[in-house]
Every structure is written in structure tokens, then in C-alpha cells.
Length: 159
Image (cartoon, rainbow, N blue to C red; front, side, top):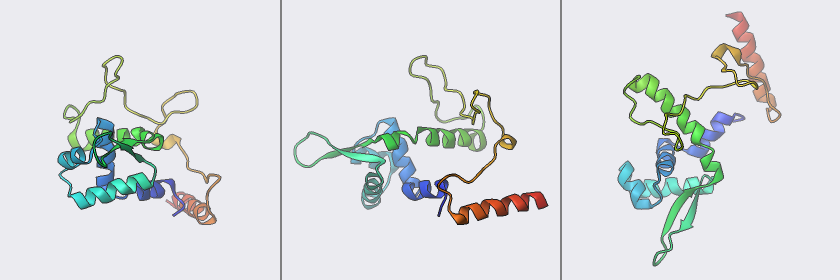
């Protein structure tokens, strides 16, 4: 599918994969840590870790202990998922848990203050609302994607 969201979901695979990435952000590095934290079976965890390594989101790092023991670390590609996880957490905090019931608080390491909510902004830094953005075909848009966008625009005008 010629869509960035669809391709990102393909790279993630399933919800276990995002939870593994989340735990890696929290500091988990070893197979046993992921398994204990997530309560995931060994075969599923092995599969998901291999998937993340194949997609360049995690890398296997020699743990430096006796035998073949590895740890997993986020690659640059994996670290770039911080805004994705942040957006999912913020949405859940607002719509699932509700204000004042957030299970986690993300804070600035330097100041200790909570990080402000992420919002789309224009080139001058002004926050943009839902009605202030438009979707256009990008340079990699297939003919099908361009047709779908045209179709959606005409449907919106008919409403």
C-alpha cells in the first residue's frame, strides 16, 4: 500500500512489537527483561525481536558475557519512534485514562518538568488544529494514491 502509515504498521507487525520498542525506550535490553515485563511467550518474543532487527529498528549487540548472549538496542531508526510512542501515550492518557489518571509521566531530564503535549505546528511554531492541515500527494505518491486523494476531496465537497 502506498501509504506511510500502512508501511509503518507493516514494520511494527503487531501490538507486541510496539510494546517491545516501548520497553527498549524504558531501558530493557535483554530477552529475559522483555519476557518478564510483557509476559510474552519465548517463541513470539523471538519472532518479534527478529522482525525488529530485520527492519532496522533494533540491533543485536554482543552482551560481552560468556557464550552467545545478546542484548537489543534501538537504532537511529528506532529512536526516531519516540514521537510515535509519545503521541500514542498522550492520546491514551486523554481518552482512555483521563486527565489526572495518567499511568506514566514523561519529564525533561534536565528540568524534571513534564514534557508539553506534542502538536503539529506551522513553520513559525504556531500550533495547528485539525481543520488547518491539508493532505496532498507527495513525491512518492503512486497513481492510485493520487486518485484516492482526488476521490476523497470530491466526496468531502459532496457532504
